[in-house]
Every structure is written in structure tokens, then in C-alpha cells.
Length: 412
Image (tube, rainbow, N blue to C red; front, side, top):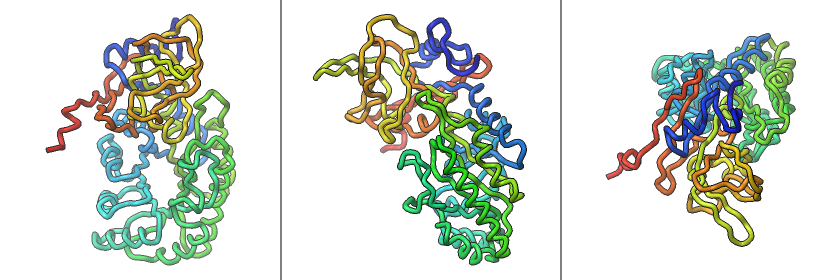
């Protein structure tokens, strides 16, 4: 077996005891399975094998260097959403033609960085951004490859904070304005329009919005061809969700079956930007019980990890399964599993039914490999957690635990 499973009643990662890892590295602690990352990357790659495609891993999901390097070794490109993520991609071994640069508010410094490097594509958000890209490229006597990010006004049917394809969202160029923008910039010095891009949201478990977005881009590419603007590729973004609660969700094959039919006849290659789907199930957050409190008829199990390590439950009302690493026998309780932060919202799970734990018991927050460590903060002056990658039965520290000295090193 690969990934996270019970071995003699205790959770393990690819055969390595999570208790042993936590004993060695302390808590809070992120642990990732290299085998799960590889299996999930290959599942998407193989599902789209019948059509020319590239998978550009979305670094925003988890940009820890070892994770990025692992995805590069599997054949992925990179999708970067900031200059910092471009730098991380380069440090992880990606070369500029393997990097797609996305982002709703690219600064001049970031655009200069991307243009000087010669990234594969800059996904342009607006006519104003195209003007800035063209001006910088002309200054450097070069041409920047750009894709027009389309806002197709499609509801992703996921949480509103992670839906990005509606006309009321800040992202992209309104679909009914794209032809005029493309005609305006198609012959502009410094620009080469090579693609159309759309990303309608994240944690999508109903494939209809993704299929509709693909159809919209194919239709738009045909219209632009009639206008004399030749498109090389369609960037269909990412967004494929996972099962956080154990319910059924679309597979990689289902994903391909929804996207490929509308794209095949166009003859255009596709770029996909998977992130969460690959790394979320590959990670857990380990935390220890520091207190058990009862008042007002409620039981609170307090862990040493909370919103500074995993903010998704507080930010998106996201659900994560939470399990004891070592199974206990005894009476079950209904409790709130909470963190140590000075915020009432610092709750990882409400009304959870578990066997009553004891102080120092180890718990695992499952499916925490995406938007976990990468969104962590130092609120309450809490150091960032350590991270471990298990590969071929060996647990390796890939990010040391931050110290208070690290926290104040930039202060005077």
C-alpha cells in the first residue's frame, strides 16, 4: 500500500510510522507521501495522453522546494502566481520555457522578470496589462508570449472565495470583450498572442463548469482565427477537486472525458494547471493534544496546531477528516477540535465524534497537502512548522522548523 493507512492500528505513511516521524521532528508537523504525489500526477497525465498536452503544476497549492522538485522530476511544468513563485520554480530546476506566469496583479518588476527570463507564457489579465507587457518588451527589443485570460462568467459551483470565473470576480477579461482586445493587440510590437486561458475556480467536483469553459475557449479560438489571430494552445487552468469527506468525486479519467471532446476538433494543444488534486491527499498535518476542556455542555480538544498551520477551515469553512494516529478504545465523545490561537474561529473541526483522547495523544489532519503550509502564518509569533517527505520508505526533513530567531531576524 502507498500513502496514508493504518498499520497495526496506527497511521503510517508509505510504511513509515507517523508516531516515529513526530517523535523525531516534533509537532506541529506536515508529512507528505512522494508516492501519492507521483501516482496522482501520472493519473492526470495518462488520462490526457491521447491529446497534446502539458501539465504545469500550480505552485500556489504547495511551493515547498522538495515538492516542486519532485513534480519537475515527474515531467511537470510550473504555474507561478508571483515573482516569488517564479524564483522558487527556477530554484527547483524548472527552466523558463516550462513556466507559465499567472496572477491578477502583476507588478512591473514581476513582468520585467518574466519577460527577461522568456517564460513560456504570461497569462494577461487585462488590456492595461497587455499595454505594460508590450512596453517592457519593446524596451528590451524582444517579444513576450502572452495568453489572454478569459472571464467566461461561469459558476464553478464551489465555495465563493475560490470561484474565479464569474463576471463579478476580479479575474480575467470579460469574454464578450476578448475579440476587440485581441484585434487591438495582435499586431502590437513586443507581443505575441499564443493562447487563451481560463481558470473558473478551485475544488470543483461537478465537471460541467470545466466542460463549459473548455467549449467557450474553443469557440473563442475559432472566432479569433477568423479575425486573423492564430492561437497555439488553450490553457484550461486547474480546479479539479478532491474528496475531503470520503464522498465520491470525479476521477482523472472523468476529467479528461469532460474536457477532451470539445477540444479535440480544434486541433489546439492544451495546458492544465493541477495543484490541489495532486498534493492535497498527499499530506497530513500532525498535532498533539495539549488540553481537554469542558464547559457549557461542550467538550474542546485543544491541539498544538491551528489556524497558523492550516487556515482552510477558518477561511473557507473547509472540512478535513481528523483522526488519532494511534487508535484508542473507550467511550466516544462529541467535541470541537480546536487550535491554540487567541481566536474563537481557531477551530479545525466542530462536533466531531472520537474516542476521548488524553493529553499528548497525536492526531492527523488529513488531506492537508494543499493550501496548508503554503498559507501558514506567524500570528501570535508562532514559528512555521517543519515538513517531512516520505520517499521509498525513508522520511526526510525538507523544511526545518522555524525558530524565534528566524522570526525576528529582519527586525531592528
